[in-house]
Amino acid sequence: EGAEERVQEAMKIGASGYIKKPFLPEEIKRTLSSIMGEAEHGQRYYDDDLEGGDF
Image (cartoon, rainbow, N blue to C red; front, side):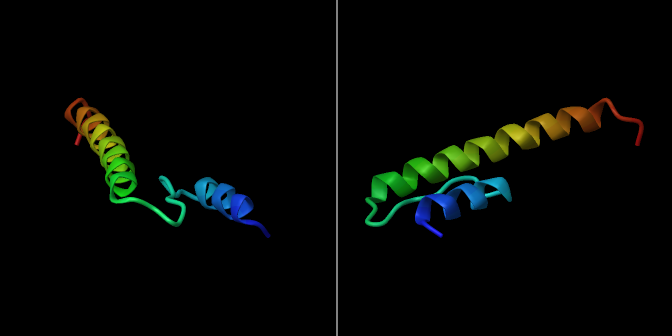
């Protein structure tokens, strides 16, 4: 199994991203910023749903 197949499988089961070696600090920052932005967007969407819910 090659690296590309492992990346694809990881993405299928929920990985938010990956960083190839060797990597630069800027790549880590960019990837983490992207992941954190997705998480924040998802949390806001979830919070909006709760406000309209019947809890």
